[in-house]
Image (cartoon, rainbow, N blue to C red):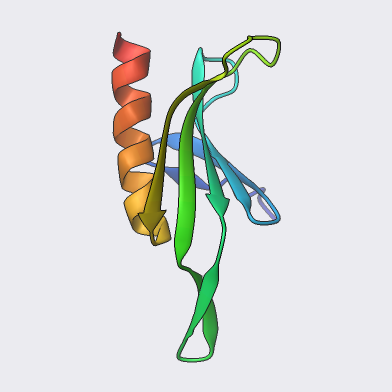
Length: 91
């Protein structure tokens, strides 16, 4: 069976529990999305309150967090995260 990679707008995503990392770790910036709360919709747990952060990929950087916001829903977090990431990588 082929290895399936999760992507959004052409960038890779990785999930570890309630944390999603978006972007290529070899580039200067990545986005971290932390699912803080969930709600039940039709018997399915979906993300409700979410924290999104634009981070420097360098783990040794003193101030890794470049931008931070609270959003309602995973789509809103991915949307702003992808905009931040695109702008940061171009700048």
